[in-house]
Structures are given as C-alpha cells and as structure tokens.
Amino acid sequence: KQNPMNLHQTVAREAEAAFQAAGIGGSAIVLQPAKNADFGDFQINGVMGAAKQAKQNPRELAQKVADALAGNAVIESAEVAGPGFINLRLNADFLAKNLQTALSDSRFGVAEAADKKTVVIDYSSPNLAKEMHVGHLRSSIIGDSIARILGFLGHKVIPQNHVGDWGTQFGMLVAYMVAQQQDNAEFELADLEQFYREAKVRFDEDAAFADTAREYVVKLQGGDAAVLALWKQFVEISLSHAQNVYDNLGLLLTPDDVAGESKYNDDLQVVVDDLTAKGLAVDDDGAKVVFLDEFKNKEGEPAAYIVQKSGGGFLYSTTDLACIRDYVGRLQGDRLLYVVDHRQGLHFAQLFATSRKAGYLPESVEAEFIGFGTMMGKDGKPFKTRSGDTVKLVDLLDEAVERATALVQSKNSELSAEEAANIGQTVGIGAVKYADLSKNRTSDYVFDWDSMLSFEGNTAPYLQYAYTRVQSVFRKAGEWDAAAQPVLSEPLEKQLAVELLKFEDVLQNAADTAYPHYLAAYLYQVATLFSRFYEACPILKAEGEARNSRLQLAKLTGDTLKQGLELLGIETLEVM
Ligand code: ARG
Image 1 (tube, protein in one colour):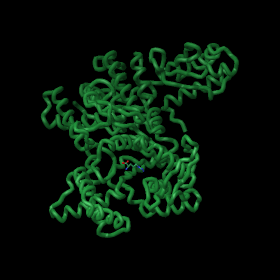
Image 2 (cartoon, rainbow, N blue to C red):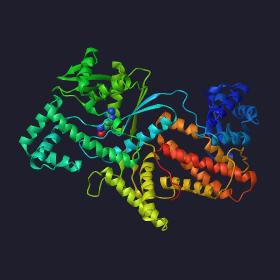
Image 3 (cartoon, protein in one colour):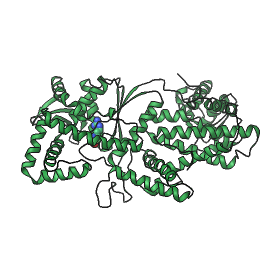
C-alpha cells in the first residue's frame, strides 16, 4: 500500500521507471534527500554500481536515467553530477498540490502504517526499593516517545512498566517497616531513598535484624499474608512516587501499565521446569543453566545463561523468560521493544536467544533491545550530585522548572509570576526531554543545563519558540484561505515545502528503528528552514497569492512542529 502523499515513495517510483527505461534494474537505486539544497531536493545514487556491472560508462548511463526522469509531473529536472550521481529537483506544482492536501488533512498527510502491529514496549521499569533516579529518566522519556510515534502511525501500543518489586531487598525493607512502626506509630515513607539507606545500615549492623529480614524474604516468597500486605503497602507508596514523576514529566504511563517482577513469581518454576524438559536448561554445579553456543567466550566456550541458582533461587533472567512468554502469549505482541540501559544488552541478547529456542518467541515476533547510553555530568563522569550521590529525579525536574522560569522571566519582564511559572514548567520539562531525545540514544550524553535551556541551537526552547513565532504571524494575519492551491516560486518556499512533506518518511523511519532523534533532527531542520524562509520571504507584507501561499507554509510548519513535538512528548505554547 502506498500513500500518494509520501514524497520518498513517489520519487522512488519515478526513479525505478527511469532505471528500467535505461535498461537497468530498479534494485540498484539508492534515493536520498539532497545534502545540499542548492543542488536539488533528492539525489539518486547507484548508477555507478549498475554501470560497473553492465560494463558501461557511468556518466553516460546516468544521463540516460536523467533523460528518462526529467520533465514529468513529479520531477522538474534531473542533473548528472560527479562520477554519476543524479540530482533531482521536484516539480513546484506537484509540491503545491501535496501541500494543499496536507493542509486539508488532520494528520498533515501522514498515513497510518500499512502493516499494523501490536507493539509491547517495556520501559521506565524502575526498581521500587529506592527512589527513582536519573538512570530511569532516559528509559522513561525514550519509551514514551516511541510509544507516541508508534501509536500515531496506528500501531497498537501496550506499555509495560516492568518495575523491580520483588527479591531479597524487599524482605529487608518490610522488616524495617515493622521495626519503624513499632517505634513510631505515625511512621511515613516520605523519602524512600533515606528509608532504604537506613534499612541497609541496620541490616549490615544488626545481626538479629538481618535474620528477621531473611525470614521475611522466605515468608514473602511463601505467600505469607501479613508480610505480603506490608510489601504491598511499600510497593504502592513507591509506585505513587514514580507516578508523580511520570505526571510531572507528562508521560503516558499510568498505574495500569505496571507489570512488575512480582507478577511473574508463580511462573518461575514453571519456566525452569519447561526449559529442563526441553533439554535446554541443564544442571551445572547444582544451578540450572542454558548454554548458548552463539555466545562463545574467548576460549570458545558457550555462554552460560543461568536460570536458577544452586540454592533454588531465581534470577532476573528467569523473570524475564516468564515475562516474554506473557508479552507473546497473553498480550499477543508481535513486536517487543525493551528500552533499557545498554549495559543490559547481553542479558537481552541471551534472553531472546533462549526464548527463540524454547519457542516462547516465535519467528513471527520481533524482539528488540532498545539500548541507551549513560547520562553524564559536565565532568564526563556519570551524572551525580556535587557530593557524589545519585540525583533524585524529583529534584532534577524541580531544578529544570526553576531554571526555566527564571530564564523566561529574564527574557520577558512583562510576564506575571504565574505566567512565567506556567511557561517555565513547559520549557523546563521540554528542555530535559529534548536534550535526551535529540541525541542518538545509543551514545552517552552530557547533561548540561546551559545548553539544553539555550534558545539557540537544537533545543526544546528553540523549537518551542519557533512555534510561538508561527502563532504570532497568525494573530496578525487576518483572513486567508487554507484550501487554495499554494504557489511556490521562491527557492526557500520550495525547500520548506519539500521538508514539510517528508514528515511521514521521518516518522516511519523513527518508528522502524525506535530512534526518536530522527524526528528531533527533522523538527530542528523544519524550524531552521522556516526561520530562513521567514527572513527571505516576508509573509504578512506580501500580497495576493504569495501572501496566502506563505501563510499556508507557515500554517503547515506550525502544525508539523506542534505534532512532532507532541510525539516527542513535548508541549508547545502560544506565547513565550
Ligand atoms: N528494573 C530494571 C532496572 O532498573 C529494568 C527492567 C527492564 N525490563 C526488563 N524486562 N528486564 O535495571
């Protein structure tokens, strides 16, 4: 199924026909957006390779293709360059018609995906024993954006917040709750981080307490009602802390998306037994291990994926095996995305390999590890507080809003305190999210307040500001006609039109690869082009068709920025 609005597909079709006309197979085509708009809108590559195969002169062959291409309804001109590239310029009338369609469409010409999938996205997933810290920020923000993009393209998205709510730490915490309640009837869990630290100190120093804690672990796993009730109380408080952070960040996650480790407790033995029965898990010094030939170490020995410890205890791996069966079986996922710190890459590779062998993950289901790098401080070390503690997410977000509010106030002294606070919230949270989403997720990135809050460069404030600039044009525009066919005569008008019409391609690409930075880079490009267009082509001072066409370009720019930012989970403002 093809969307006539999809520029890339349409141009590719033309290119294919031209390749055929020149006597070469269409499969050789590589079509790219032009790197430099001065030379055209798209570039065709691949003639050189085809020429070599056919033992022909590449420039001559390229000329044949170019001749077959030029002058049709889509492509205005095709010029051979260098050793055999072909630079394409699109037909202005064709662009104008597409622009007109996009303007009349509530989805800006972006079609839903042809092949709709049920996508399970495992993200955020903090450990509930402690307060959420910056390590969970990336997973939460990236997962949220991927969920939004896939949802917009019509996929069924099932978020799963695989929180760490089970295991030995909880025995210790519950024991400490009991101890606290005995001392202090009013006891509250306001600061989980401190609570955890105190519990740990007591555990390390007080042997009797440590014994009680271990007893509680056994009771918890054995389903003791009283201990379970305390555990549940703890988990609920911790989850409500996490939900506050999600709400402050404006994430889509709700309490219904929580599917923590504890949920799979009853399946763990079942999984180990099943893997054993299938001959996959074998005894190794009392532990149960799956040997994976595809992960050999330097000595050529297969990797050992441990699924049960020698004492009978289960592991993170066991839980994830039970969980993946659930994603496929109960949730019927056909694409599984795990948005987790890149240090867990090997765990997931081995999880997927084991699951394939065990039949938990059929060939028809894709499973992808959506890894991301570490958030670094300006000193190049993992982001910490000045005293070297992990930074609590709540504090970080408060600081973002505070800084943004002060900044907004300093730029516009006419804002009331309340207005400044509202704008500061949107700009501050937007800046933190965008700083993350605009980088390739697989690399580490430096968390730097000054650069993320700058109004220049590839930042949220820059894009949010660009949006308000568009809005201010419309406050002064008076009457205009959104439905007319625009006329694109200036090079920058055409260039902006071409860019705006790439929205669908970019979204599909971001969805397929789960790389939100493709979308961010695109929005930055749109905003930058708009600003060049705005300088070169006066909008409100123009007359007649030109004025109307420029307003149409401005309208689609604003809509694209707003929708695009929304898909990154970032809000826009009418004024800043
Ligand atoms: N709770 C884990 C952590 O904080 C992340 C869980 C990721 N999801 C999963 N299915 N293992 O490291």
